[in-house]
Length: 257
Image (cartoon, rainbow, N blue to C red):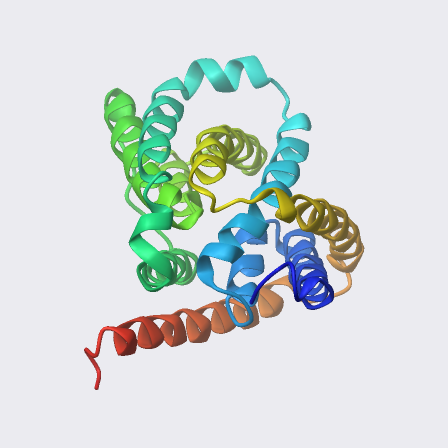
């Protein structure tokens, strides 16, 4: 779909995707970029979805980080994770445009399935305190390798924080910091390679506004709906969508033909 010739359609897609994603994040606290990109890939190419997601993802996580208790302490305690994440995202984000829609779709789908498995089955491995720097560097690098290509580095971040067994508020603060810091190199890579184009700015701004509206609605719904049931339905949707994306990618390479 060409933005310049289908501006109204793109605006509707972005509004719908980020409104739903905002509601999801408001109700269960996670899943804004995952939800938005998953929905958009039904209508636009994966690379276009990555570009359209850039501004709303950045705005949402800066807003989340602004509510953190002690940002300076976050930088001090998670500098190794942040450094390896930024370096690897900066490298891989320059290749997202080159590897093409089908590979991006495949990487994103696998990351989504890992996210689903993490939520369904949990992750009980606990790190030793003296191994913290090792896991920060390793999982930060893994997040960067996936994040630059598919704009989703929340899975390694979530794994690390579960291994560290942090408290819920700290989970929100740290994940907000690490996802926000990753937005800087991914923005550089996507802008430099044309994944994010100037004509996407207005749609990104629109997505940011609708996501905030959706989030506020989701917060109000949080105590009125069964969050566990809502989350389970969302995970089923993610799973079906990811499997569909994997099949489509494999068909393009004639693997399933």
